[in-house]
Image (cartoon, rainbow, N blue to C red; front, side, top):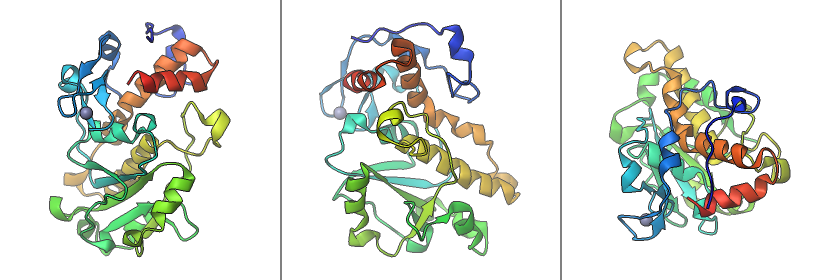
Length: 263
Ligand SMILES: [Zn+2]
């Protein structure tokens, strides 16, 4: 059983709490959810959300943020990647109309290859800015709901992702890489370099880069304040805070495992 704490003064220190200057809804109500409930779809016991059905439990459904994204996101998940470990589910919970998760070999329908990109930093990957600039008009990109710009993310370890990358259905797609960002992922000290983003961080930065491009084009009706997307980090910031509070920098690996088991 994880215990939760009220914010300490360190909560307001941006070097300790990297989300303090983000526009993220209050998640303190999550601390009051003490009991697990039954997922309405699969009947499994869950605390906040079902990480196999990608839906929140009934008691928090109306309270979590709802985000409308400017594009469609498809996440292909390796079947061996533990569902509870992945932050990809956060995106599906918070932007349910625009994010879909597929358990490989399930696959998204790709309508137009020229409007679908794959986030993967191969040597021939371009930045999103470069790709969008190659279209004759941003209106051609930012199209109707059915014909929207799509981005595919692969969720899993590098080894798992490389296997999915070889799937013939992904061949011919433009690869895209993000600008450089530092992760706030609490496992990185041990397993990764700090520029290896978690999936939800990658989605967050990708959406912001996309919206920034549209905003720079000066299309007022499509202009959205970038802070609107900070709520993509709603569950991520919550988990980060609880791990900070419980372990104060010690045993981050164990903390993460507890957090998964408690989802
Ligand atoms: Zn379920």
